[in-house]
Length: 307
Image (cartoon, rainbow, N blue to C red):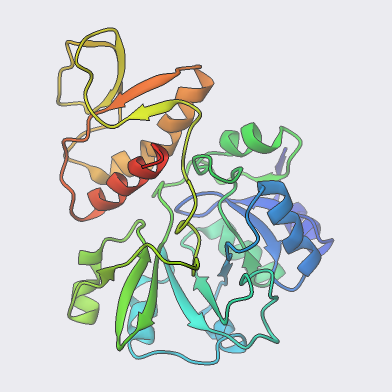
C-alpha cells in the first residue's frame, strides 16, 4: 500500500512500522523512541534478537543526544560521507538508546541517508531505526514491489522509486586507534583513503555481531546459486553484458563490467527475479575484479550462495 509522507509520519507516531526509501535499500522504519514499535520490526522480519539496528537521523547534531564518545576522525567522515551510504558505530548512553535497538551492546550505528523522502520524514518524526525492508536472510528490497512481495500488498510503503545505490551502507568502527570496516557496502575501503590517509582494514566477522550483516545468512534467494561456470549447457547463467555464454540455456545480465555501480544497483533485483520466475539453480560468472565496489558485490554473492 503506497502512502504519502504525511501518512507515514502519522503511522510512525502511532507506533506502526513503515517501509521507507533510502539511496541504498528500502528500510523498515520505526521510531527510535518507541520500544514496542522496535519489537514489531524484529517480529515482522523474523530477525534474530542479537542483530542490532542502525539509527537513522536527519542531522549530525541529533547524534549528540545519544553518543557518549566521538572518536578521532568522526567529524571528517561525517562531513565527507553524510548524507550518504556510511554508518558509523559509536559508544552510546544506554539510557538514551533502547536496548532492543542496540541488541544490548554499548554501541549503536548511526547514518544520515541521502534520500529526500527519508530526510523529510525524519524531520517530521525524529530518529528512526531502519533495517532493510525484507524478511530476514532474503535479498534486500530496492523497489516498493520487493517490500510488498515480502510483507504483502497492504503493508505501508513510502514510495521513493528504485534505490540508486542498491547495496547497503558501509559500516565502520574505531578500534585500536584506527577505523575499520565491519560491513562492506556501497563505499569501498579505497573511498576512505583521502579522508583518513589509509584504507580501513576489512573485518567483517566476529563472535558477537556489532552491526547487521555479520553472522547470519543474508541476501539469499530460494534459488541455489553456484559460483562457478557450468561444465555443460542447459543452465541459467548470471553474467555480464560484454560476455557470450554459448553453454547457457538462458543468460541474466547483471550489467556492464565497466559499471560496478550499475551492477550493484541491479544485484538484489536480479536475485529476487530468480525466485519470482521459479528458477531452481543459477550459475554465476565470478570472473570480475575483487577491489573497490566489486569487493562488496563479491561478498554479497558469497553470502547469497551461503558460502
